[in-house]
Length: 457
Image (cartoon, rainbow, N blue to C red; front, side, top):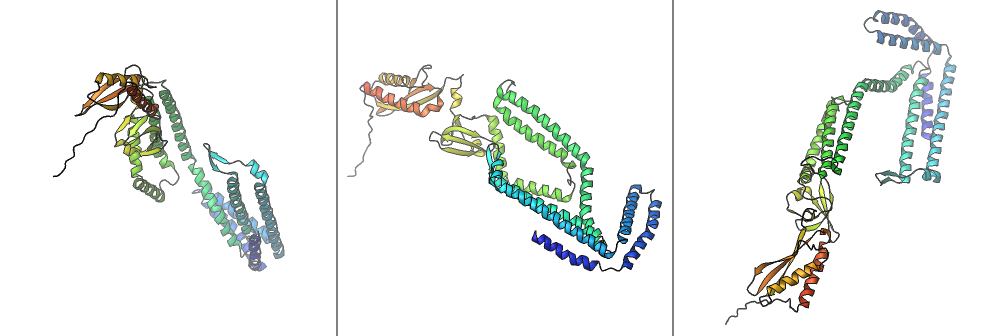
């Protein structure tokens, strides 16, 4: 505020110096304007046939300047100086009141009452700004608005004060031009843009309603209420997102010529620059995005499936356009880029446990010497599998002999289960039951191993 008053005080000597005009100069100016007005009016009248609107506007401007100069010319120098000083004093008072009002508002925001009324800013349940941060943002905007209001008042008042004196009259007109010309250009530009704006709004509204219709059909497909041959329900959401992106891109291409400044070289240059940066900096990102779309329509897995990707086995907890996240049985989260998944072998354990399938086969192997009857080994392994929780009774577990070594035979027990999420627990119980079964049968599970040692003589 002190700086503002200092600026006003600096402007006062300029007003006094510029006001040192003789009464004759201003009288001559008044007479000159008085003499020129009829001549200018005749000129405007003669050219009224070519540009009637412009001529009428110019006539009104000249008449206004003439009337203003005539009214000011009737006042003495001291009267004009007194009016100018009075206007400056009123202006200082108005600016002081405005700054005082903004100061009171800031004080109310900073006290406890303001903190209680202003709540934190959330976006989709995420806290973006706390109450104190929201208050700080409001104070910044209030401070900017205060300076804008003060600048507008100064720019409107100073030219008006300078217009009281002949020497500073042209300077006042120049200042008013600086203020009014941009405002006029903006207003004219906004008015001229209204037809294009209506077209843009129509295109956007039509696009939104089309997307609402597509979203309705996507929801029906996802819920299974609407079915198409060869189209799976889990394709509905990604297909809708693809159509949404394509439709918005098509809409932007249509409304692009109607955007303000779209035909300017600067606008086109910025668009090309952004396109080049995006294409150079997002090569791998675009590759992962395309791979994500391919994986979606390949349907190798879905959320919640137990899968094996490379050497990692776990449950799919997230699948988006860029990456897939797998949670292992040890609560480890492993992230795979879509490109890596697309180029890797994927084992899905859930596909064998669907309702129309017999179930996932889990298996383990044991070895026994040939002195142990194979029928006994088969019976013990099958009974151990049947005694294991989450193992299907039908189909019945079975044993395969996978190897006949020099000193022992290899037996593989296979059993069915649909509880894929409990596979580690099923294996643990199966191992325990196998050990207990052979122990109860009096069979030693230790297999003999032999090796040949050569000794040099």
